[in-house]
View 1 (cartoon, rainbow, N blue to C red):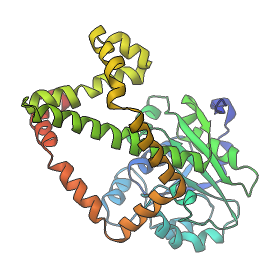
View 2: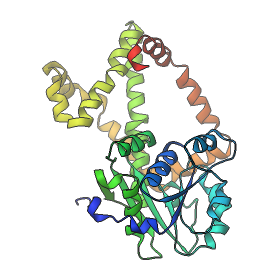
View 3: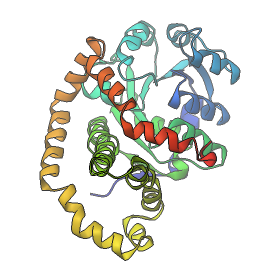
Length: 333
């Protein structure tokens, strides 16, 4: 099944220009959305915690930030984009829900489907519920917009009270630059489950553990940690940049024949069918809601496992070695 793609001609800013947009959370994604929307001619209100660093940054960037409640209750507000962390969204939503109930033609927007997929937020009956999810960090969303381009994005419509849910989502995507690169239609379920799987099994969990285990294998065999760092972590960017720009086959064309043969003959011994079985278990835990339940409970307890693992990672020899080496690389500064 081919993905449904949308571009500039498929989206019309008029749908969004009829509404004031509240950006709740001026963090990584929030600052980019707010600035891009403003530069696209959209009436934007920023909401964050008064006195916070994000609140102060919004002021420096020319906005007049308010609390979430004060922002949403403003006359003419027709879109509320929740861009605070997933774990904070339910509480923020409960705070603004009474004001959302009072609105006609209101849209509740997300950039990740976690709280809708796992029913941590139950939207009011009067609201459209949509997702516009850039496939890149906020600083990149802003940077490429300023260059006249955009990053690819996903859109989804969970609840379409107005009958214009997709048009509205595409209008928002266009306003922050997405339709210049291409927008793929998905669902909250698909975006959430694939996003969590990618983070856990490949992009964060998988890649980090692969680098750590490779580093540990070399250092435990007596090789210098600095050499192990270069071979198992530093050069990862060189390989990923080749894959990112032109694909795996181009990366293989660019490396030595020895390296390419090593990939074919040894790679599946490291990332084996047994690894894939574990990936399937991870996906099943995501689909069933077991991971969401575990993560919500971890937050309720004050993040004891999370904090322990973070501390272990910060104090791992690969991090200490990397800091020492990066301090020598002036171009990284």
